[in-house]
Length: 168
Ligand SMILES: [Zn+2]
Ligand SMILES: [Zn+2]
Image (spheres, rainbow, N blue to C red):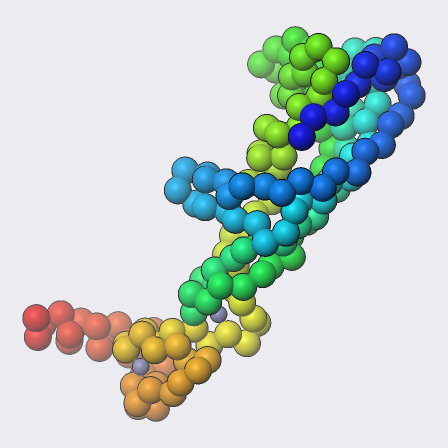
């Protein structure tokens, strides 16, 4: 995901725009795997101000997510806007990305932004009932007898779990 900026470097202040569509391999953020069900659609406006590049735009894609409640795989629309800066020889304090030669390499920025904007947890449907905490059956598909026994509050479920422990 690279932008050739040879022209912009000669013409400071001239804005440019790019539309990119890139299929992305799953990302591994220290064990949290993020997979994509569609290419990344990236719209970028970039301008060289004589010192560095101002890069802003929007990223949209679809995540291949797993429901935090029931474990079902589902497709989750995901998108966000961003505004970042690229400089040639940034120092630690600059808090921006580095570009080399006549190219802006957007990969690191995109990786960082996806991680920063990820939903904390993904749920397949607002009405998802999840799994029964006692028998583990999917309550969207089935009704188990434990749910019918009124073990719906966390306290009662916990009590049941503790009793199970004693029996072991
Ligand atoms: Zn679910
Ligand atoms: Zn159950």
